[in-house]
Image 1 (tube, rainbow, N blue to C red):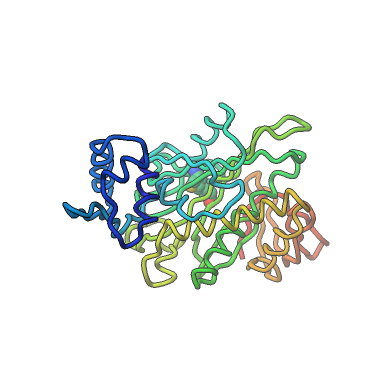
Image 2 (tube, rainbow, N blue to C red):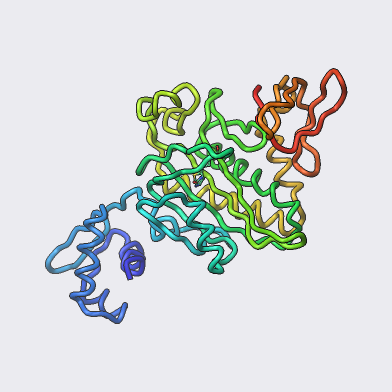
Length: 322
Ligand code: BTN
C-alpha cells in the first residue's frame, strides 16, 4: 500500500491529489490513506497537504527501502524482489536463510546497518547505519559449480561502472576489491551452495562505502579504507547509486547467461589496476607459499596469471598486494 500511495503521488507530479481520490483508486478508506501518509512522513517523506486540494510529495528520504529502489529501476532479474532491513546481522546470512527457503534468482537483501558484517577469510566488515550500501544478491544460474567463483567479478565491475556514471574513477584489484587512491571502497564476499553438478544458489554480498567520512572509520581502517563521498568530495545519493549498480549487475548477469563470461572479463580488464604490475601473492592457505612476479592477465577461469623468475604461476585464490 505504501508504495502504491507513493506511485500515485509521484504520478501527480507537482499537482495535489485528494485523500478521497487516492482512497477510491486504491479501494481503501480515506482514514487508511491518511494513516499511511502519516507513516510515510515519519519515515522522512516530505508530503505537504492542503485542506481543499489534498497531498503532494515534495521529497523522499535517501533510504534503501524497496519502494525507493524500485522507483524507475530498469532490471530484468536483479532486484525485482527486494527484502529490506533497517538492521540485520549480515545480509549474506539473511540471503542464505532466504535461499534455503526457495527465494528466487535475482532477489536482493539490503540493510541500512549490519551488526555482524562478514568479510573474506573470517574477517569482520565495518557496516555503519545509513552510510553505505550493504547488500546481497541471490543468483541461481544453471551453469556448473566451478563457474560460480567468476560471478564475483560481476559485482566489482558493476560498482566500477556505476562509479564511472557518477563521474568517479575507481580500479579493481584482483580478484574483486574496488579501490580508490590505493584504499578500499568496496568489499565483496561470494558464497555458494552446490552439488557436484548443480548450483543451488550463489550469494554475492557487496559492501559499498558511500557517505563515510575519514573520521567515521575505526582508527585501524583509516589508512586502508575510503568512501565514494571522500573520493567525490560531496555526499552521494545512495538510492540512485544503488539503482545504477543493480542495473549494471543485471546487464552483466544477462550477458553471462546468454554468452558466458567474455563481457565481464573484458570489462574487468578495463578497470583492473593489477594487470601489468609487479605483485606479491600470498596464497589462500595463509602465506606458506608467497611469491612475487608481474601480473599479466586473467585466464578463462578468472585466475590471475603471474610471470615470475621461475615461470608462469596461476593464482586461483589468495591475497595480492601491488
Ligand atoms: C571483504 O572485503 O573481505 C568482503 C566484504 C564483504 C562485505 C559485504 S557487506 C554485504 C554482505 N554481507 C556481509 O556480511 N558481507 C557482505
